[in-house]
Length: 195
Image (cartoon, rainbow, N blue to C red):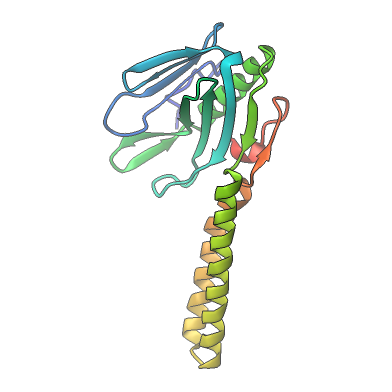
C-alpha cells in the first residue's frame, strides 16, 4: 500500500487523518522550522524551540502496528503525529515509511539547528510503573485461578487459562517491551519505536 501521507523522496512532509471527520493533519519541515496544520489551526515552530519529543508504540483495535510522536514546544503546546491514517469507517491504513522518514528527518534538522530538546522513548515512568503493577496483580490472579483449576481437576479450565495467558502475554508483551521509558540521542533513534 502506498504511503499517501508523505513525500516519499525526502521525508520533509507528512499527513494523516486522525478521524474520519475533519481534515488531515499536515506537517512540513521547512528551512525555518516545523510547519503544522491541524483542525483549522496552524503554526511554525523553529527547530530550536521544540523542547521535547516522545516516541511511543500505541496500538489500537483497528491497527495493531501504530506508532506515535509527541512533539512539545517551549511554550508548553504539544502536537501528536501518528503512523496511521483513517481511510474508511472500518479501515485504518499504516503509513510506516512516510512516518519513519519524517521523524528521522525532523530529528536530523533539530540536531543541525543545535536543539537541546529532551528526547524520550516509551511511556512516562509513572504510567509504565502503573502498567507493570497492573500486570503483576493480573499474573498473581491468573496463577491463583490456574492452581485452583488444577486442584479441583478442572483441566479444561486450566487449558483455557493457559491459552488466555499466552495470548495476553503475546499481545501485551510487545507493548510493554517497546514502551519501556528511556532517553535517546539525535544520533541513535530507538528502532523499536519506529516502523
